[in-house]
Image 1 (tube, rainbow, N blue to C red):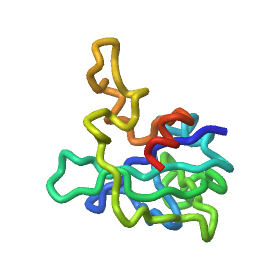
Image 2: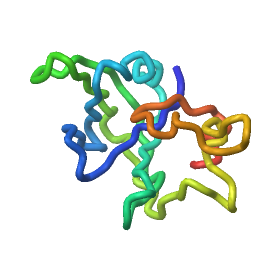
Image 3: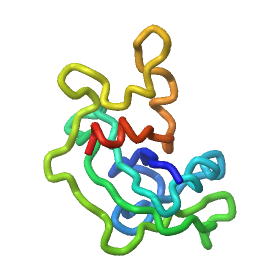
Image 4: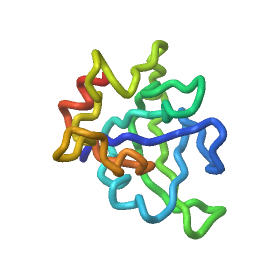
Amino acid sequence: MAHCIFIHRPDSIYDDVPSERYQFPRIYLSRAQESVNDWIIYYEPTKIKHTKGYFAAAKVQQIIQDPHHDDMFLAIIEPGTYLDFGDSVGFRVNGEVAERELLNEYGKPSANKRSAIRILSPEDFNRII
């Protein structure tokens, strides 16, 4: 089990309903499977105007193949576990990157920050929560 970040955008091409399911391609399957029975945090990229940053948490109940798309999967959210933060958390907290695991050896955010699903350390999870 592992905490993960699931990137979600309201204008996404994916069939996401954050309180119910998160659709993703096969490339992220192994990461998503690690989140089963654990908590994830939803993140809306802050590069886009009027976006939220980290905005909610939920518990992944199971991962299934999308019945409508052979090359896609769904992370099914455990009913009643979706928790909107109310006040979102920015990519930077007190001037520091909230997900410190994203920093490269030079202290700059790595390309991994673009991954739609990424593993989140317990320390980073607790910092965001």
